[in-house]
Length: 219
Image (cartoon, rainbow, N blue to C red; front, side, top):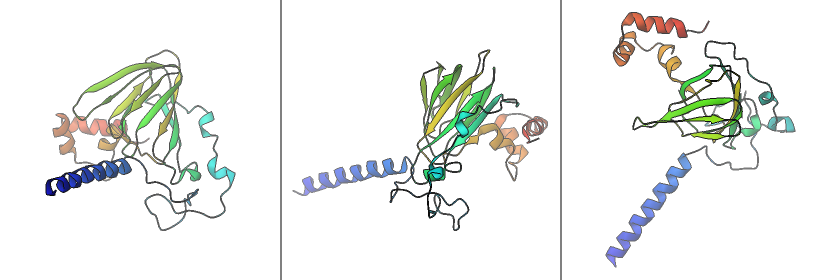
């Protein structure tokens, strides 16, 4: 009987571990029907406090209907539709974004620390990919009507190698997935990462580090 009890205990622990990990895999579940974010309210919590007197406009936006301006160095533009634009998304654990790409445009390598991303191609053709923690590069060319998934937290990118503009709609399992662009994060942080750290990490000179910092600095 003691052996059976130990087996039940082990099974219970495994079940609780799996359940706990599933809970941590996305935003916390909501505890009421709606909790429209009070974006100016204090104190700040893990999310936003609920405001009173919700309206339809708290659950509505038109921002994804207009292509973003891609006349920049990367040739791409991300238009977010998360809790900051749609306060009604607070506690719901979902958000969207639109990404537009000029010909040869790039959404540079980046991560979303709080969400998995799935993209649906509206127009054009893109080369996309992500890198696993085992340093395996998984890539695909996707075109209009096709879907690709970028697992949570993994470095990924999208590149328009075509001669016409491209666009996608991205969905996330977080109201505020967060974005860390690898190059910008490392070379333009405040306060800055020490130049000697970057030089050693990338096996380049201090002068080359400073040149990259200059190129990436906001204009």
